[in-house]
Structure formats: structure tokens, C-alpha cells
Image (cartoon, one colour):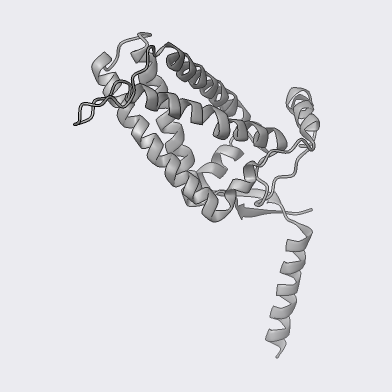
Length: 224
């Protein structure tokens, strides 16, 4: 089967992906400083920059949710257990033996079963936990103009643990993700696709037939 360049990642999808990555890296960097791992901005500025980046992250999430639901791209993340064992075997063993990829990537199905399950968990569990715990942190004992405290929690320890644990899970995912982007047709093919939007995929039989019909129609019109 022949291969053809397809627009796999649309412009907003690429913008959302890189902006999300940038914000996550910055949130992690400033977050570790807040925890006292090192000193770069200074504690006060680190908290301020972390809060600004968190608001930007929330705004990006709102736009991403809107885009996913209006375009139908949310369907890409519906988890499935079909071929998940084959996918695991490929990443653990097959990839080191140059075995063929068990899942065929298409424009309508960009993710393999393991990716779908992972991204679903991130979007439904990990990121909501980070966002929710972060909001609790930001509005803890927050006074209003009427003098009423929006939240009055006895201790932030549980929230701190949840926020940090979710952050570590997200960082672990990014580390694995950075490795997996090198497992495409070439080391840089996946990275290039997310930069340009285009990727070489196997041309579906239906697409080939459409092209053949288009060529035939073109020839008929030229003959007339």
C-alpha cells in the first residue's frame, strides 16, 4: 500500500500541544522552587509566576475542551482494550526487533490503544486533580469584600500531597512521551508531524479509488 502526506494535526491542535507543554514545564520548574528544591526566581516571585501560569493553563484547557467537542476530536481519546496486549508487546519487545507496528495510524484514529488509555487517564483523572487541588490552594482562606472566607480548610496537607503526586505523574508521562516520540518511522518523524501538521500515512484503499476515479473523470473531461 502506498503512502501519502496527510494533515494529521490541525493548527489549533499543534498550538494547544506546544503551549500546554511549555506551561507544564514552567509550572513544574516554578513548583519545584516553591517546594524549596532550588532558588531561581525567589520564593515570592516563583509563587506569583506559578499562579499566572496556572491561570493561563486553565484558559488553555477551556479553549481545548471547546475545540475538542466542536470538532469531534474528543472521540480520539475513547479508550479501548482491543490490541492493547499487542501494543504493550511492541513497546517492550517488538520495537527493539524492528517488528511492524501493530496499530495502523489514520487521520480519524491517531492514537494506538495504549495512548488512548493513557491520555484518557490524564484528561479524566490526573489533570483534573492538579487543577482542582491548585484551585483549593489558590483560594484557601480567601477573603471576600464581605469578609466571608470562601474556604476554611483545617489543613492543606492532603491537598498538597495530591497536587504534588499528580504533578509527578504528569512529569513521568512527559519523560515517557519524549522517548516515545522517537519511535516513529524515523527518530524525528513524530516531532516533525507535530510541528508541520503533516505526516506520511498509508493511503487507504478508498482514498486510492477516489484518486483513480478523479483521474478517470479528468481524462474524460479532457477528451470532451
